[in-house]
Length: 233
Image (cartoon, rainbow, N blue to C red; front, side, top):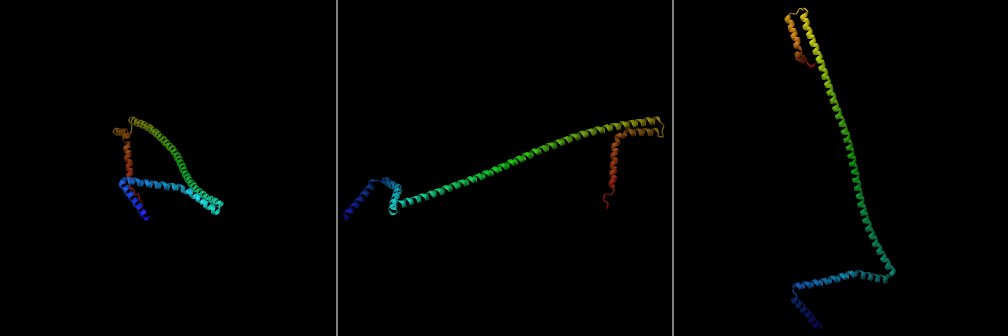
């Protein structure tokens, strides 16, 4: 038997050697891949059948040891535990969604509040701008009215001053003419030369009176500046 075993082993070795000689590296690679694929398929089939076989074996064991009622109770407990876990996961998912929704609602409320504040601020600024515009318009109208009033007052004053000026000039001319007529008609102690000088002075006086008055005023200011301004000096 040992000799027969050795011969079989030897024959197997010869067969492998012959296959290695007849099949090159690429062929051997394909054969190895095919063998690995077959093993993978068998393992996958065993994995698919493993759960049903496990359930059948467990049922047979617990039914034989504790009876079918105990087995059903155990299955019910497992299903209850699975249901509780699923319920917990479902509740956790619901709580997460609720938290997200609450957070989004709070964010939305914050945005709504900010928007309302912006609208209130916009309305406030708009109202203030309108009031300021009205105030500026009123002040501008008042300024224009005052300017027009001042202009008309200045114009009236200028007209009145011109009116007084012409009246005074007319009175002055009448007085000078009367002085000339009276000085020539009526006798007086003044000589003819003195009368002529007086007449020339009264004729020239309106043209030089402003300059004479300015000179007198400047002289008055100069005299006033000579007086001490500080009581301690």
